[in-house]
Image (cartoon, rainbow, N blue to C red; front, top):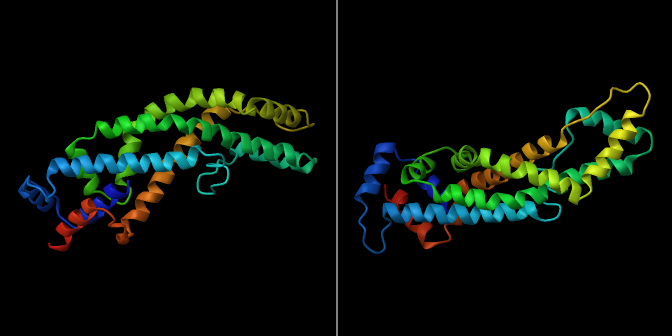
Length: 236
């Protein structure tokens, strides 16, 4: 991810025609980046970045203690949470929030193969569009190419994770307790769907954060590939 975003920043000042002209004129010889090398470099860098971000989120508390992606309760359950705390059941309310995030951490483990497959399918035209794009072009590419597959993969995993991490029992108890309170509006939320969408949102948010950071951090020219790419911009 670092390589692809730094490469993207390096070329962002070129007009589309100018960039293509530069790439077309690059020789295939040793020491100079060819189109094939740029494409391969982008894929490798994006795979590395994805692996790094996904591993962060799959760790214990990867969601729960990361304020950028921590899954909060949907609006209808915020009332439930507040009411439980009012009647002295803060511990149960806290556990309910934690198990939602635990299910997301478990599900995101399924993301890497889907992302890797999307990267394998990347064409040079995709790479060029990413290079010429805005500060979230790489993230947008992944969203456009993986969201349907991610939902299909995440949803059943989260449903199973709710059982594995005990979320189904916790939330059954929470909903039962809340619905037994006189005069309250009964609730029956679809927490699997909600958590699935929030888990996906968290994955893309973390990738976007790194993408933006690396774009603006020019000191990250840490590899020969990045030095060569930036040399093209430096000489323009």
